[in-house]
Length: 104
Image (tube, rainbow, N blue to C red; front, side, top):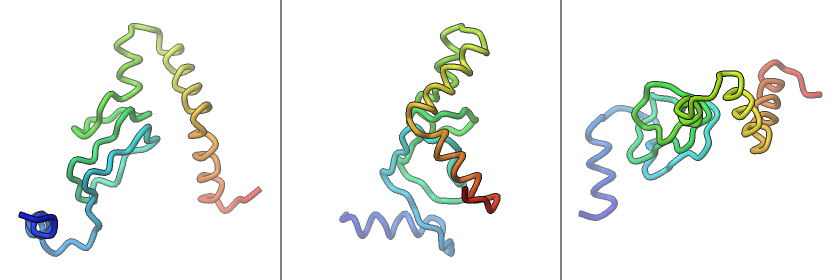
């Protein structure tokens, strides 16, 4: 079966949806959960900076920090540091400003 045949097979599983499908599209260090309405195939969140109950997460950072046994305050400091160093905090703040209609 070629790639076109595989895509047609996947699309036939849930006909009528106009959402794009993500195939082999892992997300690295995502800040927020992905839209669950979108179909996904082999597209996990790797090292997500959040924790939820979805099965498509690989090594969520908050869970790793919990497993170390350190205090919640220390976990929060490390998570904030990761977000600061990665630029995620700045991106989130910019998105919130745009969402609130502020661009300054």
